[in-house]
Length: 317
Image (tube, rainbow, N blue to C red; front, side, top):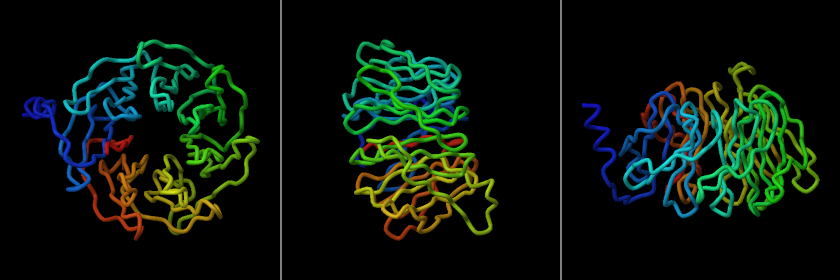
């Protein structure tokens, strides 16, 4: 029965609505959620322990970090077929696609390097030594800078994408997991899972300009562990996943104050917005589901069961 279901999932599929693609790291699958119906429409097999996921800028292919397969897989999103693997280095965790739609910057946790892969030639074009246990990856809107966060060194490494050399290292709190540039490229945000904070850096000076702490009534501080986050339309608010605290924090991006907390599933990891950013989809690893948040009301409106240990999320409009 399972074999039959997987075979069906590989048949060509005409996308009638936008989708959220969710990697299930313990099932070695992707769950595809239809945004209109808020139902899983496909389950697609992948390599071992899929985590990071991102689409090409034209959405013609989807890239998947198959961490335990030591590869980045390239998939046709229409058919679910794996077209080929890219050389990614060992244990790829997260990655980011450069604005040129050609170069993937990949964090290799086991090797303490950032690997740069040309997706057209399918070749490694650079390997950059970074701190111990790199995970988070970001690239500036103009493509000039790439960021790698190293979980054990507790740093954000600033990489010049032209020279492919580190131009700065900035300290953050313990176990940085995720990094994002704001829409205008003026700020870099970095979450620290064990430190329990999000640090904000001025990109021009690379100096820390603010730090956000979180406190949830009835939740022990040790469980407040910021991981992934997403910025609302116009960079007015940040939505921060707080891991085993089972909440998403809503942060005012002008004042850097937490406005409220939204209860979601267990062990929230990462998130993706709907195309108009009216809904936010969170991956909840331990409860094996996705919480749908109405952004305007800041209320959870549905829980969608997916595979075991959902981790990454990406929008296919």
